[in-house]
Image (cartoon, rainbow, N blue to C red; front, top):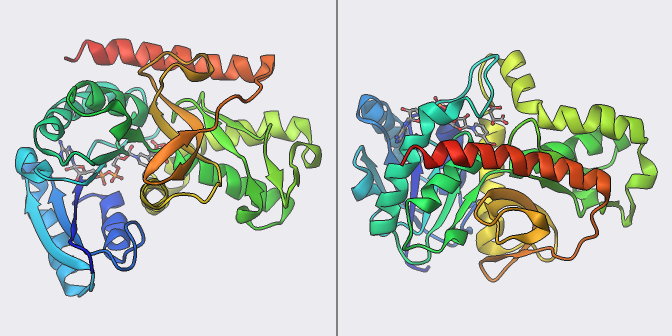
Length: 324
Ligand code: NAD
Ligand code: LMR
């Protein structure tokens, strides 16, 4: 067995963490042979509840768990961190937009970005889940100038998984039959789940779905699925978000064997996206790094939808810059 990796989960007493921690502990992210040291970070008011979560983790006797620490001290939490899931943040309620969460949550990511900058291991991978996830990742990366920006990702795998699942239900084939899907942009209602390049069972997908269904039902339903869950469940998605976070970090660490996935990461100017904006793009994973799927032809219709996300994220970034 290799030496343990240090994994931090923030918002450790919350709903997503209650699912995520057990998946990490089971080896679903870092591998079935890889021990983990788990650090559960919470705010002081919820630290006791996080202790309860840690007690249950201990009671689960998971063989890969080497150590569990509960803390409300973020500097201590991120010291030596190899991976950080930044989940801790207020979820939106009915009728709120994810961008509305910026005022409530943005400052959290300044503090945590700084603590990561000063203490995290050189190979740290940071996945921001707390909303608005893209701009919170932008904030954390900006607050951590000594770490490469590409160490900071935001979660859009949930959107990607939702797209695959809706297509799977529509065409009555397993979700694994779809390749070359991407969800461009922001984890918000402007996001663009794009099937232009996608295949199903090796055949072009666009030939198999009706254009009216694609633009009139599929795109808006994927984009608004988080709100639909809040409406029906009464609170924000949790187990599916945890599952997507597991998929994202696993693929980052272990690779995708050529399969495309969607990752929101700081743009380097590709596809006309402003450098620095944390934007959902198609990637593959290999050797512990993401590789952009580059050189795709973009139609005018795609360009419009991508640009709507650039505009929205530019506006969020301007608000975020004002928080520093
Ligand atoms: P929750 O309210 O159940 O738990 C959030 C926890 O975070 C709370 O226990 C709270 O005390 C803690 N917290 C708040 N500030 C913190 C800080 N500074 N440091 C550490 N912990 C802190 O919420 P949840 O359902 O677990 O959702 C968490 C976040 O994830 C929300 O912002 C939600 O909107 C977001 N989310 C994102 C996606 C996505 O796909 N990106 C999906 C689902 C939910
Ligand atoms: C989701 O997409 O389910 C989360 O971002 C929660 C939300 O506010 O929609």
